[in-house]
Length: 400
Image (tube, rainbow, N blue to C red; front, side, top):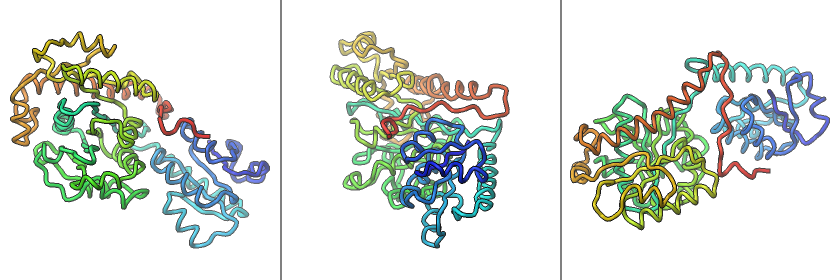
C-alpha cells in the first residue's frame, strides 16, 4: 500500500498512472505518521512537491528508525543538488521530478523491490527485532545494576547477541561493576544523532570478554547527562534492537525523560523492590505511574530482591501492597557483594548459587519466554509476514 502526502486534493488523480490504485492520499504530516505507525501494510510514502523539504526530511528520518523497510520517495518541482543531498542524508530513497510520471513509476518500482528484499530478510520472510528489557526501581540500593549486569551477562553467555545500556547517565555503575574501562559512552552517540547505524553503535561499545556481552556505558562526567537529548537515547535503542537479540537497559531510580523513552519502546519491564517499606511504597508509586501513562501491565515482571531477609515483612505483604504478583524471589546472599567487588557477575562466578539460579530463572522463564511466544505466534504457517500489532507508545499517542 502507498501513501501520497500532498495538500492538493487533485494530486491523487494526477499521479494515479504512476502510483497505481493502491494509494491513499493524506494531507498532513500527523496523518501520515499515524498511518505509518498504525498500519504495517503501508510500504511506500510518496511526498508531494508542495511539502516543505524540512518536514519531508523529518518524516524520512523518523521512518528510518521505526520502519526501516519503508520506502520514501520525494517529488520536487525542481531537483537541485542541495535538496537531493539533504533528502538522501535523511533517508529518502529517491528524489524525482514531479512532472516526470514515468520516472516516478520507475522510482516506485525500485523502492518496492528494495522493500520486498528487506521484508524477506532472514527466515520465514519476517523482520524480527530484538527484545528490549528495561530494569527499573524507583528507589536506589535495591540491587538494580547487579540484576541488570547479571541478566545481560547470562543472555550473552547463552550465545545470544546482547547489548547492555547504562542509562543512569549521571552516576552509572555498570562499567565499574564489570571492571570495564570504556573510552566512549552514550554521550558519543550525540554527534551521530540521526545517522546512527550498526557500525557506529559498535564503535562506542566495549566488550565484556568473559561473556561476549557488549556494553554501552554511561558518561564519566555527570555533567554530560544533561547534554544527551532524549531522541538520541531513543535512536540508540531502536538501532540496537535491529542488531542484537536482546537490549538490556539499566536505569537510574527515577522516571527521567530518558527512562520514559526506554520504557516506551520496551518489550519487558523488570520492576525491583526489597523487603522495606520505602522500597515497597516506591514500587507502588511506580506501578501507578506506569498505569497512568498507559504502559501495558502484561509487560511487567516484578522481582523481589533479598526476599528471605528477616525484617518483619514477607513477600505476601509486598504483593498485597502493590496489588500484583511477584514473578521471582531472589534470596539474600553475601556472595553477591563479594562478586561485585571482584567485578565478576554471580552467574559466572558461582553459577549454581541460589542467587544465580534465581536470576537465571528470571531470564529463562520470564524474559526469554516472551520472545519464544512471539516467535510461535509469528510463524502461522504462511510465508507472508504477519502484520505486527501496533505498539502502545507514550510519545506517539496524541499526534494530530
